Image (cartoon, rainbow over all chains, first blue to last red; front, top):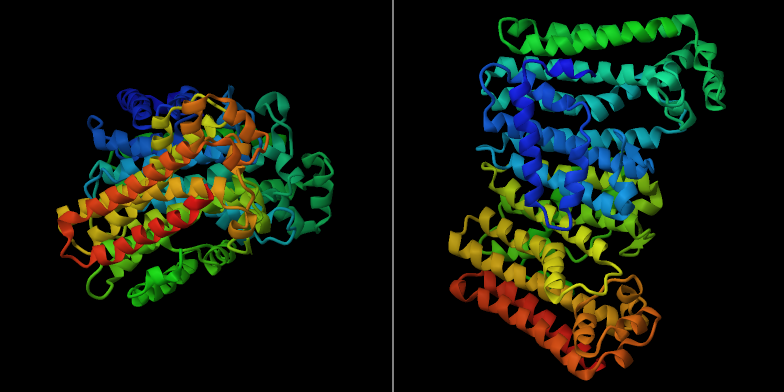
Length: 316
Length: 316
């Protein structure tokens, strides 16, 4: 996602980076370099963006900055663990903690980072913030456990797929929106509208990501096509094609056949139709708060995803 | 630790096990067997015991039971990760999640278990409980990172050793005491006395555990002597002997020499003296609350540790 999505929120993101850097001091001296390293090469800061957009309007308060930092720290903790589990050496062009400090230290560091995020959440006046953050974190990890267990299981249902991506991705998107709206002291209707937006956007974002894995080749994505299929992970187009033409497609994809040659035009269309439907549901969720500043920022995200999907679709 | 330490708290521990079993339902169907498995072979439930003892007096409330469950779940989450990092197949005579489900699922399951503990903590009326639990969790993991980094470093100081074991073990002991006293609505002086007790007991317990590694042979402990030294981990007697006679002792222990032959009588005496001092400090911490029911239960733990240390000392 381009940083133009951050436009108009410069003060927020400046304060966020400063706040994140300050967290280093809360850790033991031995752990501080690891904190510095994971913050030095930022990703898209997509979850803070959701928090800021959901709480948009007026100058950013410390509470809102801290809330955005909390959801980012939870996300970073899951990335640290993902990189250990995938044996990943680099992320955002820099060495991972797994590569620099070994799997042992990296697993424990991920734990400490996550616990620190919860400590920050406990600084809020009520336990509401802890509840949102802890719940989203549990669901993210549960979703990843479910997906791990489903690897190599050619019989998983479409419902399972949707449940897994909701847990793995959409729960923290929803949580980020809730956190932002709550900490900006928006009314309950605003919080729920943003939460619903985040849930649908998260599902859409994961479907898009799964389509990229099948359609966008090395030169564009800097990755190998069909790595999900090779690892036994079944995504939307694979499940739809399996239901349409039988399990042969899964065997073909797993042995490295070209996804465009294995999956029918009808299945690609149906996949993009389902992606569009989630984007539309996300936009629909904001109707009740049309007058507030939040849709201005949030609808940029759906517009961006819609355009990215349109660029990907002709490749199918 | 023998279960006689639980005597007089049967209703508490009965309710605790029932409460823990009920948590399974909060997880996704795929994750529930893992929850069941880690609860089926309980350890000593030492942290719940500290919580119950610190909040002793009267019938156990749901809040106190939940608090004890939270500290146990945090402890179980760290064990799940420890077993992945150590490649451990069994614990308490049963297969570990690492063995049954693989490292990938086990790391993520540990995360989910920890997040669930924080969700339970967020059910309390104020964020105080989240604060205690998240802080203790961060310190446990930070302590383990520090200890991991210090492996093979023959120059670590005695202060580092004490700091590492305080973080790794004593912080969660202290947290368990705080949680119990807080949830039983004891006054601030009671909470602080129990917290100080927990901190000193935790340090004493870890020194004792480190002495067992050097002194108690296979037949008694079911483990190999000197595994800490072999893995490059330096514990109290090793550091004291290094400071007394030079680094040769570390080389000797690492190549598998018998600890009793490498470490001088003076060093063993000094190690046990330091263990006794921590036990005495723990007992001392309870002076201000002498009249309350808590010391009755807590002093059993120091008495038990004192006896265990006395049985170990002649072997030195």
